[in-house]
Length: 312
Image 1 (cartoon, helix red, strand yellow):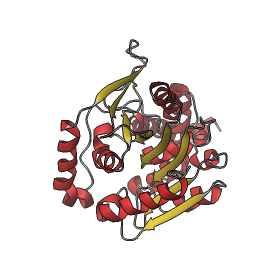
Image 2 (tube, one colour):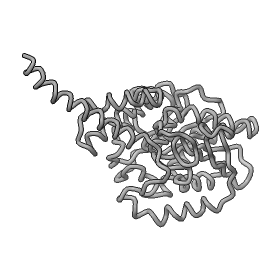
Image 3 (cartoon, helix red, strand yellow):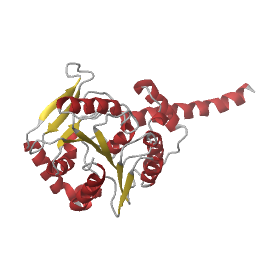
């Protein structure tokens, strides 16, 4: 009897140890900060010249450095602020994508600058110049954005109007932020290709990229997250936050997105009870909607703003 028990116990122990090691590796791969911006996907290499033209503009335009917790190196958050060409009551706060930073949003910064906005571009936790050992996928970042919003209000006059905008992880961050108690100065939100929840996104990528099932990897990664970041992956849900949203919101998503599947846009749209619009961009992959036709993208944004932002 003991021999049979040992025969079963050893393989099970081996499986458990392998699962734990794989989960630890996956957590570090996905959540640990990197101090560089990874190269973009192959399908977007064709936009490289255009992208670096925007970056060149971004690097040359006058900017101000803003901070949260400036004198606390462990918690310091950093942002770049680009004032409008002429004094403006409109400010857009832009949330960047996974393993990016404010500069990687240079094309959107230019678009909104040309639309007459002041532009604030924070580096999120674990990214760029901001502190943080781990990436929180928007969940802790949403609390930082509440502070950035207040800083915009405190530095402006009382009639400031704020637009929240984000792409990919940044889109999900703004969707998560939408469920918080937002100041009246926040008038609208635009979320480009945000995921419905990090649990759903991780499960999807486990299958697509690593050919692994949800169990036991996802629960183990979730437990690691709880221990190191303070939340389980199931806590990080844009969809549930959107149920509480009271601001008009425009969802944008590429039809051929295989990184954040387009079905998540429909989930987020369906969960929203506030005024809403959904634009599915034909033939666009992940975070490609702007690049397929920048003029058309700006036109969609402008029409949304004319309906829900400018007339307020």
